[in-house]
Each structure stands twice: as structure tokens, then as C-alpha cells.
Length: 157
Ligand SMILES: [Zn+2]
Image (tube, rainbow, N blue to C red; front, side, top):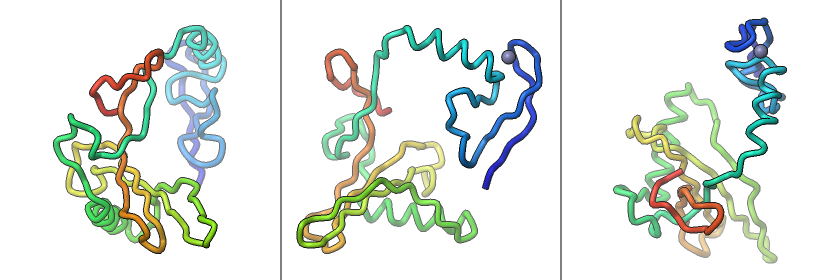
């Protein structure tokens, strides 16, 4: 589904069409506050600034600051709640999986804790699980890493 609506640029004041969902909504000039011309100027300006932090997926067992460490079963339960809240809609986040030489498939999917009972805990958790359960499922979360050094800051992304 594509959702588009007319907006007024908060900087220059001209009207433009903002696309909030559907193909093209990720275009670098599509923005809810700025018209394509102003957004282009912003993009050009910030491209000159160094990126300080970046996300890195880490197993939840390796994140000391995480108070609750969800299991794959927790994530499956949250996903079921998410589907129920969305009237049965299947909107699971899916990454490209892996296929082993013997045909097993590693499915990689994600859910946020906010989809489950923790409305104020919006972090995205990624679950990697083999179709034949050859290894236990791994739940990961993104942590904040200093780009220059690769050292985690202790914050979640
Ligand atoms: Zn503008």
C-alpha cells in the first residue's frame, strides 16, 4: 500500500507531496518536514560531517546493559501479539536467510518488544534460527558503537 499526502515545507513554505509508505518512501529526498529541494540541501550539508556512531548486531547474552534478555520464544510470543493486534496481518521483518550445503535454512526475522507487552521498549530484536534446529536460535539486538574505534558505548541503538 502506498500512502502519500500533501505537506507544506517547514523551511521554505512551498507545498510538496510526502510519501509515508510504499515503494519510493525511502527516497533520500522524501521527508515529512522538508520539500525535496530543502531536503536535498540538508542531505548535501550533513554528508560533509563524519558519522560518529553506528549500529552493530550483538547476541543479547553479550549486552551487559540489557535488563531483560528476550529468548526466541519471547520473540515468537511478541510476534503473535503483533499479528493479533494487526488483525492477522503478517508484517514480520525478514532479512535474507542462509541456506546450508545440506539444504537447511536459517531464517532471520525481527520483532520489537513494543509489539509484545512492552510498549515502551521499542528495540528491534533479530532472531536467527535453523529450519532443522541444528543450533539453538540466537536473539540479537543492535548496540551503539563508536565508528572510529569499533568500541561499544554501552547504549542500545
Ligand atoms: Zn522547502
